Image (tube, rainbow, N blue to C red; front, side, top):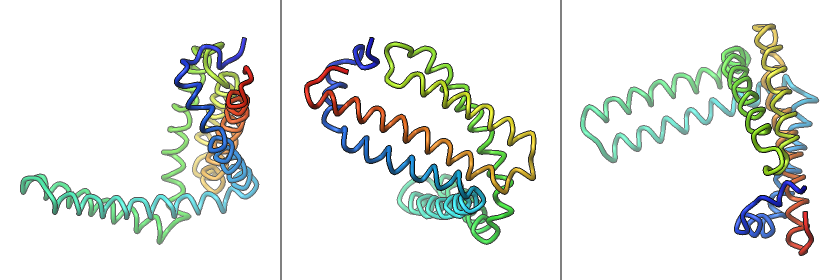
Length: 192
């Protein structure tokens, strides 16, 4: 039985129309994941810098929101949150290596929870969800690696973020490539 058999017709149509986008996104994700796995320390520092930049962008958004609307109390709160974002963002940008330890804790716990969720979702979706097998494998790998990283902190911080994100990108890429190939068959009028 095909994993796409149980999908509603409108979802099959949407997949058939967007197979190129799925395939392209999958390839990009898999390549970036492979690079992060090959060079995890570089990927860890790069991701830490990116998070710092995103926090600074978030600070600008909070300031813009505070200026544009709200009560005085709301504006004060938004400015306080913006200051916290700026301090955290600047700290991560100036000290990306130190920032990787904190981010490693957060990311390892996130991957542990994500892995458990994916295992449950994959098991629940067997036979009806495309790529449920990959979802389960992805979930187990995320849980195993998250536990290994948490057990080895703080020394795992040098490589963990890059490895965790790399594995996630690689498996997400594989799932998107698989879904894109199945969607291509749908677009060609074949059955999946």
